[in-house]
Length: 173
Image (cartoon, helix red, strand yellow):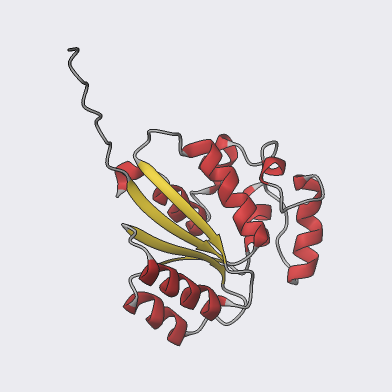
């Protein structure tokens, strides 16, 4: 009788990343495709809170954390709506790592590619549109302007990008 090979199960680290909206979700999926390969030892679950401000995002992440076990839980949210000391305290109490986009993800992305990032949210979305083929909700549209060289350069000036890319690097855990 032939000997049976024992399957080795590689233990993966798990990250729950709750994002505020669909733009963040598309961007994170772009990053995941670039930096997290199969067999890397990291399993990322991305969930979208569909807006409603920072408090809702943190509360949603806390509920998800209670229903499943993750090694780390983080939220990617805009700091322009509902970002208060109460929300910061709640995130800390629940052990949720906060990645705050100043003031919103569109501003961070525009600054990353050397574009002006002042103005209201709607204006920033319009300014970002040409750089993501007029559809910021499709992760494939980030490929041409948000490659590794741009992101590595931008992480030196954008703390949220630095933290986010750090979470995707399991060696930094």
